[in-house]
Amino acid sequence: MSGAADGDIAVRVVAWQVLHGRNHLPWQQSRDPYRVWLSEIMLQQTQVVTVLGYYERFLDRFPNVAALAQAEQDEVMALWSGLGYYSRARNLHKCAKAVVTEHGGAFPETAELLATLPGIGRSTAGAIAAFCFSERVAILDANVRRVVTRVLGFGSDLAVAKNEKLLWDRATELLPTRDLQTTMPRYTQGLMDLGATVCTPRTPQCDKCPLNASCMALAQGHPERYPVKTRQIRRKAESWWLLVLRDSERGVWLQRRPATGIWAGMHCVPAFPDEGGLKRFAAQWKAQAECVRMWEMPTFMHVLTHRDLHLHAVVMQGRLPVTPSSDGEWFCSDRWADVGLPAPIRKLLASTDQQPLL
Image 1 (cartoon, rainbow, N blue to C red):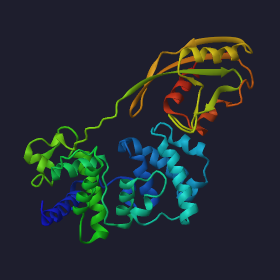
Image 2: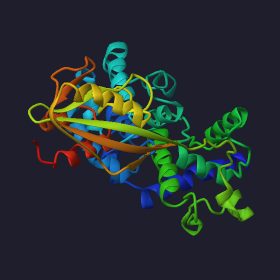
Image 3: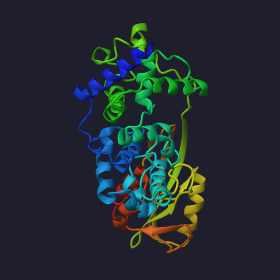
């Protein structure tokens, strides 16, 4: 594909975005890097319709990066609860602190420097730099990667590092070269919009694509074959046993999860890898409790990116020991909103809260 053709691709993407792209989203009405960064982190592996409500709530509570940096992590995690991929929220908080302490409260204006901040990878850094500072820099999120590989007919295996680097180089060649102040935000948004609405993984709407005349994958007749990435992460299934300890006066006993792993740093009911571990832990409580009754909730599954969690919940209710262990705390239901709870745990507690107390 010649340089002239590359330039023509950028022109067509920009023109299409003006007429057919998404221009109504709240973060598109600002070049404030805080707002753009927040939206980019939330949109990672999450649909726009899901993000909208969270985005507005975050801005209401944390209108700027300084407010977010000053917040307690529990409050940040609580607002994030239900959005999933909780490492994003932890890195969001770390990044805000770094911007305030290391950059005087102002986001760096280049993709290279933005990528040094916690939780900001190369593509996210490029998006912020392109949208807010019109830097001539490429992005390759999942949607854009699909568009670019199809247009170029880039069939090399992206599981190989050198091929990934080559794709970045080719994506950079496609960038606009003129009027960057206007074209870089439009072009970047245009590629995102094409991937999300037209150049979809399955059954792409090639007749509606402004790049169909130049698309190598369409000319070959198999756009669905792109991008090529042979290495696949295998899904795993795990069973967790959850013990919901409910006291008639003090609420539910919650512990903080370890700093690494699933739901890291969040609050959760005691969790065990098998039923035996749960029963041994429960026996310690039961020996010191009064008027105890126990029952098992229906098993349910929670789907993570590469793991299926089969959750078995057992409820123990009664007049329980005040502090049988030092790694937790009693929480009444009116405090649940103030701590970071994984979505399935919040739903579980809400369902058990409907049960009558002794």
